[in-house]
Length: 143
Image (cartoon, rainbow, N blue to C red; front, side):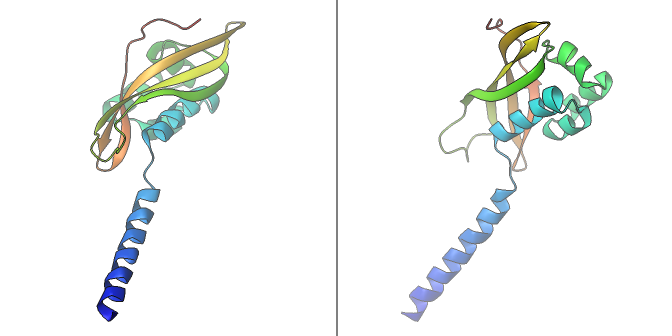
């Protein structure tokens, strides 16, 4: 009986430690929304850099301000933006996936018109951390 309790205690303690470590890991959805939030809502390129890999950080640094990133990197200048995840291409278990695409739906104002559009991004998992590595070419706007 003592051995069973000891094994059970070790198992529970071990599971608790693993969940604490994983609690700080952001999901692909959180990384995607964090990036777009930084560019479209907070308008803070430095904040957006935490969500991308080194080559993408260089691109963001080149454009420097959020409006330039919107215009030249994302090809979509908007204000009053709300964000939501439209689709994510990932397996159910997530543990085995190292590459994923996420489609983010952006709703806001472009020019003086209401506008709904989406952008597709690719993320890679590097050392237990999801990072945006590519903004995929647009297939056409939704309006």
